[in-house]
Amino acid sequence: MSSHISKVKLQEGEKMSEGVSRISVSVPPDLLRRFDEALKRLGYDERSKAIQTAMQNFVTESKWLCAKQGRGIGAIVMVYDSTIRQVGDILTEIQHKYRGIAESTIHMHLDEKNCLQIIPVQGDTTEVKALAEALMTTDGVKEVKLAIVTP
Image 1 (tube, rainbow, N blue to C red):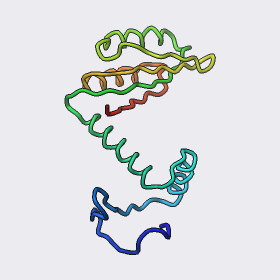
Image 2: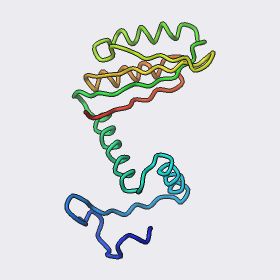
Image 3: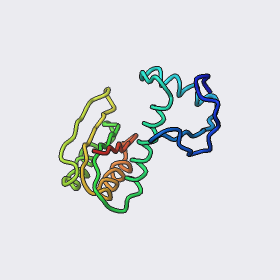
Image 4: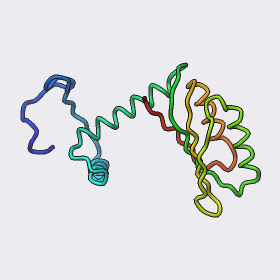
């Protein structure tokens, strides 16, 4: 812990001041070292702000991924091997089935073999998850990430 933190011991969740609660978190030393390195790379001045950002992202994603219904926005980011037979045609066919939530794509050739595709999505959370799962299970698709944001 840094020396600038007050010596007053607060119970977990006890309010320090209006709108702020102090908590204590235990992490392995190597994770803390890598976290601090990431903070420096990203230009964060303090751990608290970075942890708040990470917590907000976690809350948003978990709410969205666990939702039985509702609307959401985000993007599906995918890397696939373009040398796999008909993978491009299959991915296009899948996306056409979900035209109501995915109206466009961004495509980039990474090298002779790999392509990156970004699909902005907006609509019913169940459909967005179904689209991501359909893409994820296609032969030749190496990785799929669903990035969720709150407007």
